[in-house]
Image 1 (tube, rainbow, N blue to C red):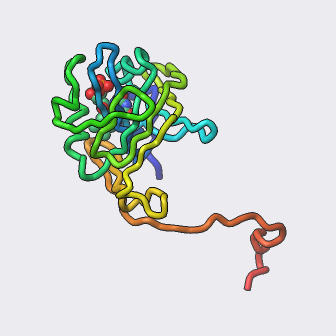
Image 2 (cartoon, rainbow, N blue to C red):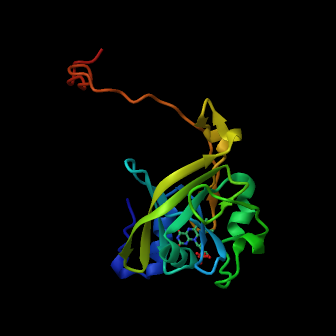
Length: 209
Ligand SMILES: Cc1cc2nc3c(=O)[nH]c(=O)nc-3n(C[C@H](O)[C@H](O)[C@H](O)COP(=O)(O)O)c2cc1C
């Protein structure tokens, strides 16, 4: 038996809670931006993923019109900083609805460092920063999807093994439903199985060992 939920027949907020509790775990983009007046901003966004390989593009969604979105519209640039376990409480603190004009870096006491290719600063203690130029935005109902072309990636050498980011060193945080957050958990590995004619066919019934 399943329980049915009709998004048309229930409060928007309740369906949103169902969606965010089931589309899990979500990676968290800790997005830094700079307003036209020079104020730096930082906020977590878990509606976040990779959207294109060539060119490299990432996306996040602003639900409503938040400072991060306004700043990106004004300046065309942002940085996605990786949200990691040691930064858990600080990340949550930057989701507070501080007034526009107040920098979360100062309010929360986070160290920033200059980016290579864009004006918004990076979070100094986050091991990965993806510096982005605004590619495009798409309005969807109450939300805006922001696509950013990644023009530079800066990765702490502490998390690299043979030049590659090692996930157990990254210790990424994820967003679940309600006020829940997740950590990495077990890592499984399996090789992709290439198709080989005649060898990947399922055995016919009675054809087994
Ligand atoms: C873990 C986490 C994930 C979040 N994900 C999103 C998101 O994907 N989209 C969004 O609009 N807000 C999201 N929020 C809420 C924003 O971070 C919050 O509204 C913040 O104050 C926005 O800051 P800004 O106005 O400076 O841009 C999230 C909050 C947390 C704690």
